[in-house]
Image (tube, rainbow, N blue to C red; front, side, top):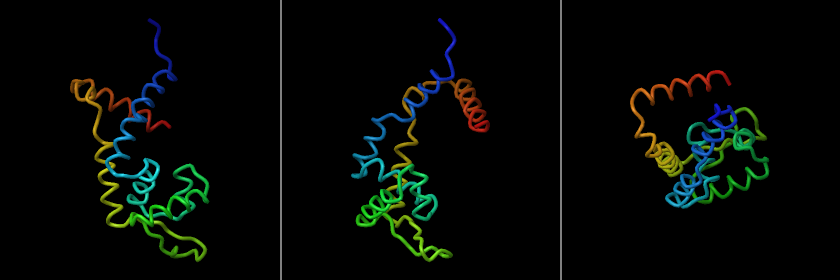
Length: 137
């Protein structure tokens, strides 16, 4: 068996992290799309201007406006005037949005069962490797 390439390992990690079943679990439990849940999670961590939210989600500003309109109508976020830029709005989570974001985080933070089967030494090695990769990016 040949040694794995960085690309092969990256794809395995991506498959694990981007597991569609986990996204579906978030959507079904919260009653909103994963994209909406992702947006609420971002602004629950830190209120941000619309343009920054769009950039952080990798979407165009007009799409962010539509997304925030929907979230606002559900009572999950609200827009406030930007403190220094009269042309901009800051999006922040409401208490309902913060609760939804916490629940999404709980679901997403639940590791796959196989990770719990790893021994203490294996988990420590994996943690050390991931921290190194993260620090070097």
